[in-house]
Length: 443
Image 1 (cartoon, helix red, strand yellow):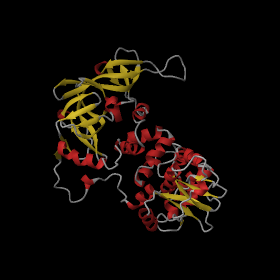
Image 2 (cartoon, rainbow, N blue to C red):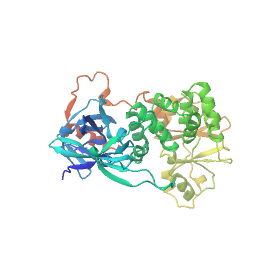
Image 3 (cartoon, rainbow, N blue to C red):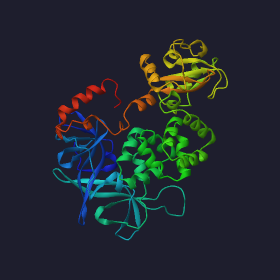
Image 4 (cartoon, rainbow, N blue to C red):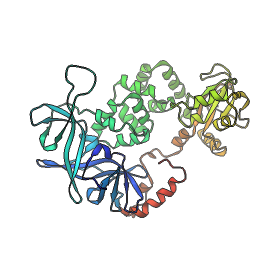
């Protein structure tokens, strides 16, 4: 059943379907324009289609909104979305703004925006869900909430006062790091930097790791040194090293001096290797155990949420010490092998005898060949004394092999594709997407 009034924050992430029931994409924002003194009019939705491309879907092509899904006419324009003058994104730009209630009861912050259908194919902003400032002088908790019609408020415009990004960040709380990175880069520059400045350090670090080096540098250069160093502390050492290598020598050294000593030491170690070597690709935080550790202990380690899937695919067995550079490297135990043995089996008896480590100076091309030849997702790296110094994971190799702009490119952007129609019938275009997804693509 189609709703005639919905709140925009609840639309974020909703699936968009064509009349045949094929999924077209998912909603990322709602686009409105101001009409003189009337409430803003909805002109369309910003929809993310396969390939992380953001496109514009005219509100006139939406036939139904409701039950967590949106139905379209089956036609969608594949041209990448570009915001025009006068257009405002509700989630990215309206949420968090301050308004003044015309009944003179004070100011409030917009936490959500309701849009209402005014005629077939026409929607407009109707009400605002607002939060008033805290009362009673308490530094804890939140202020009371209130509903108000758009016409009962006026926007507070104070020169030089930045809009709060708190509500926008809350809207993004469930996004995966790659989706968060895409969403951040899709924001207007001022809003992007504002949101980046207010994101938790670990969350911003996750997003930066999913961006191109150019975008990483743009954002990190807008942060003060203390904040930037805190974010770098939260990044994987290899990603932090790659980012610092793109900064000026003076800024890079300043940030290294402000980072936690252990984190800075790992980054300095990685910076000593060329970017096209195993040392330049590896992470210095593999899962390391002793030969006497049991299967139960190994499985408990790889289950920890802070370990990326590629790192959790195996544990490295060494002699003490167990921090890189370790004692002598003994071998690797793959998690599937651990699953085949009883919990009390010692990991030292389960080493993979066929897997040989590489040295830190092994070329990236050779590392890629080994990973592909033996169907591996990680490869141990040792120094001249056969001590483990890190592992190269498949995601780092893919980052190295793919073109620099792979995060922002997709099949619809390839050269020589100018003849492709800008508008296609999604009831047929969605079929290949579903087939690709059935082969293991994340949904």
